[in-house]
Image 1 (tube, rainbow, N blue to C red):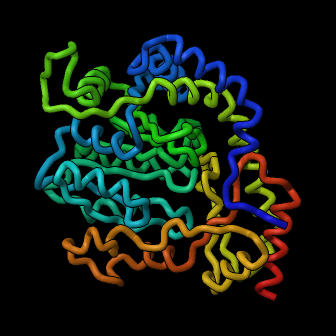
Image 2: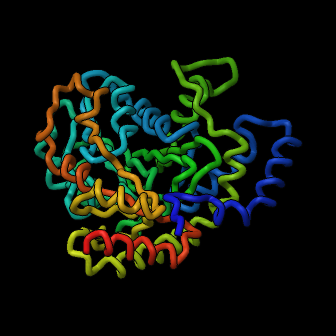
Image 3: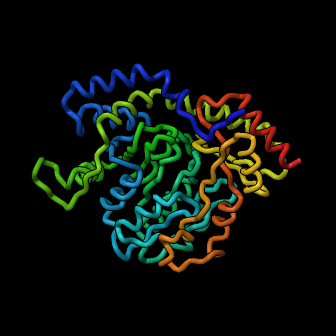
Length: 367
């Protein structure tokens, strides 16, 4: 039985006529940049989260970078980031010439460990940049307490957790400013690159709109050295359609995840993901830790089951960051996760028999 790691058919086929209509309206509008569809999507995405403002940008990395820019974080500043994250989180810090300061994750949730943050705070620390990894919220209650205590900015990286909750509050609403990606594979994915920034601050919102558009509030008048990063009008139209299905798709992700959790519960070689009390997980990825990880992946591949590693090399060991002079052993938890983790197929449309086949194959491997 073939089990791809990811397929879009179940999401997109039922929406093709809506997509086609949106494309025709887009062409006929003769308004292709920052038009009515961008404004409509921004309003609906903000409403979905229960936050006042949303500004669409070109990508998730741009969302992170521009968030740091408008907070005036720059050279010689320090930003606390997880040692276990996708490289974009760290790249954004580098783009503003600040220093990424890595903090280890909790071994249970894989998210940044709040108990390890304070020891990394220095007079140069300006912000904490938590990531809601794999679809689960970081412990924002504790992170916001620390930020308030030390008067630090908080920028959430919400790219992997659209619709996730922490203590009945949605991710992307805790921080002073929050960044997300709508890369196609996300829980809410565009049909290309796209991103957004959410905030409760009108001042930050107005600055973001200016920075994303060449530093201009009025056309041809540039107040700051800005950037060209605008959510594409067509992508906004498609995202607006898909947003109304997000809760339904997240529920299906949870059903699939629960089946995995049930069927793999009796496999001692596999460590299953756990959900922090007070969190609602949305399972952007279903990530397990396991013994003989590479051998298991090879075995699954031979049986036509696709898997991926998120992520094989922690940021501090990437060649791009060798100038920071970190070595293996400096962040042992992140390194352990990189050595043990494997992501199993999980997406709306994945069939029960496919999940059962994946789990049976894993059991056969360890037997």
